[in-house]
Amino acid sequence: GAVVSQHPSWVICKSGTSVKIECRSLDFQATTMFWYRQFPKQSLMLMATSNEGSKATYEQGVEKDKFLINHASLTLSTLTVTSAHPEDSSFYICSARDFLFTDTQYFGPGTRLTVL
Amino acid sequence: AQRVTQPEKLLSVFKGAPVELKCNYSYSGSPELFWYVQYSRQRLQLLLRHISRESIKGFTADLNKGETSFHLKKPFAQEEDSAMYYCALSVNQGGSEKLVFGKGTKLTVNP
Image 1 (cartoon, rainbow over the protein chains, first blue to last red):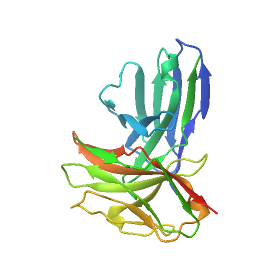
Image 2 (cartoon, each protein chain N blue to C red):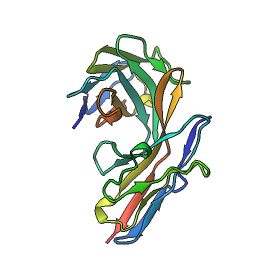
Image 3 (cartoon, each protein chain N blue to C red):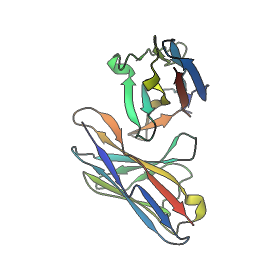
Image 4 (cartoon, each protein chain N blue to C red):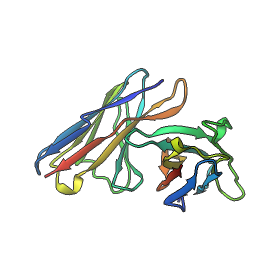
């Protein structure tokens, strides 16, 4: 079945530094990937839609200069949290949509970011 | 505005009992609804989608447009069904589709 991987699975960084999270579709091509944020015991909130070869579409209230998204290939999207602060600590989850075969979103395992 | 409501944060049943997880939606367009499940320490995975009209792991869900509901049902719950369940609505916005999730219901099936 379709698999989406995320790297790293967890990261701890100092306030003010930048952190990059990778999302890969392992056995299918994804022209569209999605980035979500999940706070403890809460639902997934869509942050942005990542489109291969074009700019990401950000949800209202999400700072595009803080959460940089790059979707350089059909199997890779990256989310960079710039100048991270403790309030950015969260669980970040990506998903990739298999348009060709199943038209289903497949989710990555998530990345736990802790900013000290 | 589009919205998905799961009124129950927690649901606890005994093994073998019927279970129903409620989901209501608000959307002006033609709704496409999904149920996702997240088992402990695992990633979110698709359980079923209304357009497939299928039964997965004994679960079914029927879209009721009149009541704007998409409740998930299983006649006989099993302990392995214990998980977090999310109802999601696919919405078309600005030419792209995205999922709007409910807050989720934690199902516990007791032995």
